[in-house]
Amino acid sequence: MIICRISFIVLLTLGTFSITQTTGFTGISTVPNVVTADIQTSIELYIEEQTRLGDGFFKLPFNKKELRLKLVRVHTEYLANLGPRYHFACVDVADIEGDLYDVDFFLAGDPGSMAVTETTVHKINGQPFYAWEQKEDKTWHRVSVEKASQNLLEVLIGHDEFDFLYMVTLPEITEPARMWLPLPTSDAFQTVEVSSMEIPGKRQILKDQKYGNQILLVNLDQEDSKKNVELLFHVRRIEKDAYAEPLPAPEKYLSPDRLVPLNEDFKSITEKVVEGKDGDLVRARAIYDHVIDSMRYIRNGKGWGQGDAVYACNVKTGNCTDFHSYFIALSRSISIPARFAIGAAIPSSRDEGGIHSYHCWAEFYAEGKWWPVDISEADKYSNLASYYFGRHPANRIELSRGRDLVVDPGPVTGPINFLAYPVLEIGGKPAEVKVQFSFNRKVVCK
Image (cartoon, rainbow, N blue to C red; front, side, top):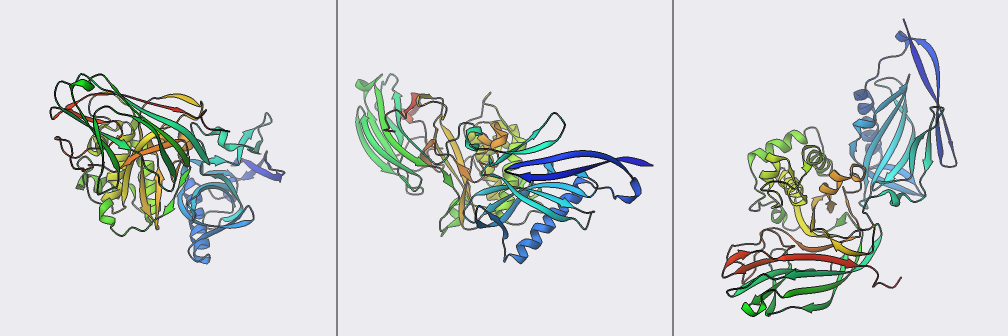
């Protein structure tokens, strides 16, 4: 019995990688059958051995420096047997600076004795250095990408600067009313300056003690009906990656929230998701992938948009609040600290105009760092899934962080679930307001 033999001639020149396919014949008994599990086992063993030799890191020369890396996951969907004793694998690895690298490997040999013949960095934080392109003659070429960031949807890397207008139109007010609004603050990744405030009624600034958010409380009367509240902020923001921060009280980010409980259902789900995974970084990536695989971004029906982890688990649809609440619940169930933040994503395809809605995200704590994630965006743009595990782009503003915010004086209805849109009470009862976000980069001198 004979089978077709496919061999590949590899040529690497000037950033172009060619795989030229040729055909021939060989006896089937001379070449062992290889399945993707064999390739996965081989690449995992290789990285494990190199990590042992590298004092706990998989070391890889890149751009005139040595990367010190930790394995996050093997892309099982890309494992391939290219021909007799010739194989391909792709993995995600994170370096000590928080960058996530996508690395391609070519291996040669039989199951149990495969050797890595070539290692190449394909992407950094989801941005490719090259793409695979198939020519008419069926050969594949690796073509360098000059400006990989242009391929990223609604992502600005580096830095961004803009004016952000937060405008509220009040309803008819028939009784004394109070309204709580977020006041964004500066941190290591964003600088926020208040350019102007147009606010009816009497105001005071509160601070929630658990998360340190600044919250604007406005007291309103009947004469304030139908008026606008306008807050204009000038924002400078940089791309956010994994960052070191002491965690003196991990229980703060392991304890449940009202809509993000700790229960046996979440723990059971998570234990199955992370089975066989070592280290919190690898386990968090498995949870991240599980949320993407199990949920759909659908804002429809009742219950979505509250950040209800049980709803997200059961219905498996929702918006960003639901995606990240589910992720946080699963992470906390196996003692990975995780936290919530909310703000707005600023469009990158234009320089001014309205913003559709708020946007939220999460962070988890592993290996001495907080790792940003944006799972709902990764779900919408699958080619950005690697980017959003460990990165938030520059084009956004954080308005507040945390759940169940407590301030004094606070709403009659109790702790604030999360704070992006205002919380308004008229006569001690919840009331709706119209909210509009907009931005303008044109005010910034280029």
